[in-house]
Length: 252
Length: 252
DNA sequence: ATGTCTTTCCGCTATGGCCGGAAATGATGG
DNA sequence: CCATCATTTCCGGCCATAGCGGAAAGACAT
Image (tube, rainbow over all chains, first blue to last red; front, side):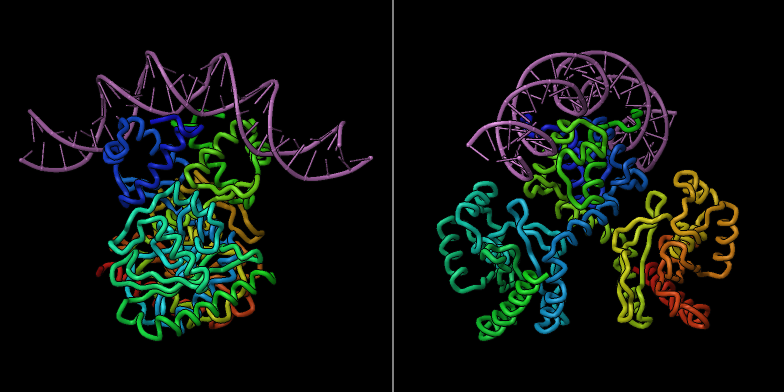
């Protein structure tokens, strides 16, 4: 354990919180085992977090508290693009019947800022706040395609190119070729690269300097995402939505 | 500064994060001034939180990151009552046209877990994750009215009875009288006790032991919340919704 | 009752959190 | 273009305290 952060105690607590989220609650000794720390240390941290109301304790199990709901709601509504895109995303979900999504990049990963379920939407594990590698989604590819190459390189250096399904892109040069196509075409695809059986179409939201600040997408089961709907109809609907969002962003 | 928590460094960081939320972003020196700590200390904490991706830095200003969105979404969906109540709350908002809300108690304060805007809903500052003193809302009163007196006493000992508007209840005995009425009547009112011009009707969601685990409400402008609608129609609609939620909770 | 597992408590000790001070950085204005 | 001010960032030292081992107190079986 290198001294990589100024305040190590805070790092432990944050890792602890994220672990509790993954485990959906846990007791002292289970956390201690997972983080490879003495139970006494973990106990100190758990008590501190609980006293500060960032955890709740039910019996001997600690859970993350709704304190994070307040912070998360703030972090999201702080983004101009969220407020402006939300009604458009809802509209997109309604007219297509599928899932419609909004993603931003943060710390080099893709973050689902908002999602709306259309009337025919399939069940899916995607949820607001979910973080995924950029190259595994159409959304992320649309964002990367409209960022300077050196910035994308930095992100890849930091996070690598781990595969999520056997269709994920794992070669750096291959990725840049794809991004080149995406930039020229104006929208991007995801064909089972993150979730088996799911396809996705996405378009970037650009600022005045043609720099991607977000992306919107529609995703659905392979069976419905094909033929002209996949190659014409959906791309056009998404590009239209993205354009409306861009315009509303500049004049607001 | 008493040594009140086991890990003080964590406490500082958490206070820092909450401050950044309140300020909607800030730089090192502003945070240092507000928390009355040296800039060097604050700088250490900010850097740690940013490296762990719980903050984002834009220029010289730090903001809370969407990491909290993920944690908050988890904290919410962990609550059974949320999943079950959500469709009912949406329905309630549609049929009444007003705001419909779901609240739970956590660490002695009321937390808005979910809210839905009906077609006629007025603009309001209430948002998911918002925390309010229990006695200032109809929701909180419905919850307290269906908890053991000693538990309510403990909450009041901890948080006091600070007024939010001039209509807020500030006397402890008066509060218990009101709670007694609420328990007998089965639902509760809020008449401009939290927000000027707003009225609210709420009903508790009870478990098998008649212990309140949450509450649902409808809130709207005073002008529309009156006469039979306020005394008959809305209470009945809310009680019906609360009952549906209770039933679905027991059989699930 | 006995043993096992967990949480909680208790002090010691070495470490690293906290701080003052100084060096960069950058914004402002004459 | 340099001077001034307000930041942020870096640095080094000291001593409070975070982290830990160990032991006590519960919890829950068998």
